[in-house]
Length: 513
Image 1 (cartoon, rainbow, N blue to C red):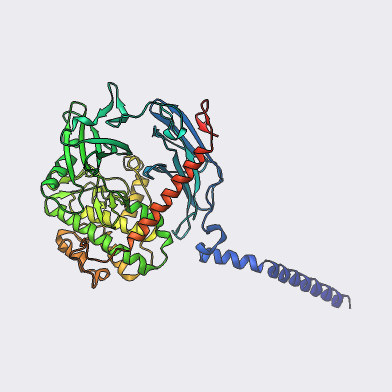
Image 2 (tube, rainbow, N blue to C red):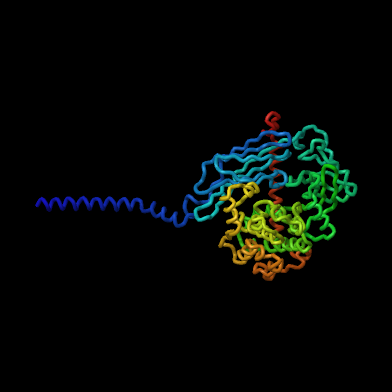
C-alpha cells in the first residue's frame, strides 16, 4: 500500500511539472515565434525597421578669417545592427552640395565652410544595414542650419552700407595680394556681377550677366599654378568643343589668364541638376512615370558622352551634380575639369569624385578609357531609381588608406553591385550592363559597339533617338518636376527672407534672434 501511495505521489508530481512546463511554453510561445521570425526574416523584425532620424545633433562653429570650422557630432545612441549617419551640407542660396560625409555615433566630423551671406542647410540621415544586407535610411532627416558671416552685413538687414561694385568679383578664397577680380579685364564682354555659385575642386564659380545682351555667364576662376598641366585639361577640352560644338556640352565663351588666375567663362545653365531630381525621386512612386523621365535623360546623356568619345576625350567625373537640366528638360554636361584626351590618361591616377565616378578599373589602377564614363552613367541611373548608391559609399581618404580589409570590402562591393529585384526587368537589365565590372563587357564599351549597345536595350524599345532636342517634340515629363523643385526653392527663400525681416541681428553672437 505504501509503495502504491509513493507511486501516486510521484505521478502527481510529474503531472504538475508537465503542466507547469506546458504553461511556460504557452506563455512564451508568442515571443519564441517572433524570435524565430526575426531570424528568418530580419527585415520584418522590429529591430530592423526604417530607422528614425537622429534627434540629438550638436553643431558647433569656430570663426575663421575666411569662414568657419564646423563640427557636427551625433549624440544619439546607436540603432541596432551596423549603422552610420549621412551628413549633407548645402548652400542655402542655390542648394549646391558643399559637404557629403558620414559619421558614426558619438563621433564628430569637421570641415571648413566659406563665408556666405546665406545660411548653410544641414541634413543628417540615419542609415542601418540589416543582417540580410538590406540598407534602410530614415525617411526624414534631422534638419539644422548654420550661418557664416561676411565682413559686410547682408543687404536684407536694411542697414546703411556702400553699394557693391558690380564690376568686381570678390573672391571667396583670396590670395594674399588679390581679394577681387575686375570684370573689365574681359574686353569682349561687358559683364556685371550677380552672385556666387559654388566652390569646385579646382576653383570658384560666379554668375555674371552681359549688360547689353542680358545673357548670363558662369565665370570659373582657377589658380594659375606654374609648371602643372592639371589646369590645362579643362581649358583644352572647352576650347576644343568651342570649335566643334555639340548641344549638351557646356559652351566656352572666353578663356583668359593672368599671373594669378585662369578664367573660363561659359554659358550659365538656368535650371537644375539630376542631383535635385534624385532627392525628389522618392515621390515618384510609379515605375512607368520614372521610366518616362529616365529614357530621354539617359539617351541625351549617352549621346553627349558618345560625341566626346568619338573626338578622343573621356570626361572621368560624370556624377548627378554634373548633369545640368535646362528649363526644357534637356541635358548639358558641365565641369570638364577632369576631361582629358584618352591618350593622356595615367592609369594610376583616380581623377573622378569618389564614389560616383570611380569605376572598378579605376579603383584597380589598370588602364581605362571610354567605358569608365558609362559606369558613371549607370551609377547616376541607379541613384535616380532607388535613391541610393549601388554600393557602400567611400571617399578618397579611404582609397588611400592602409586598411587592407576596408580596401578589399570596397573592391568586393564595386565588383558585384546589388540591383533590387522589385525594379522592372528592362531597368535591371540596363543597370546590369552599365554596372558590369568588366569594362570590355560593359554597355557602351567599344567592344560592344559603343552607344548602339545601349540603344538596343529593351528599355529603349520604340524610343526615337533622333531629334531629341527638336522644339516640335512634346514637352518632357521632367519639366513638371523641374518646376516643382524651383517653386519649393522660391518658397523656402521667401520664408527665410520673412524670418530675417522679422528678426533682429545680434552683433556679439553674429546670429539672428
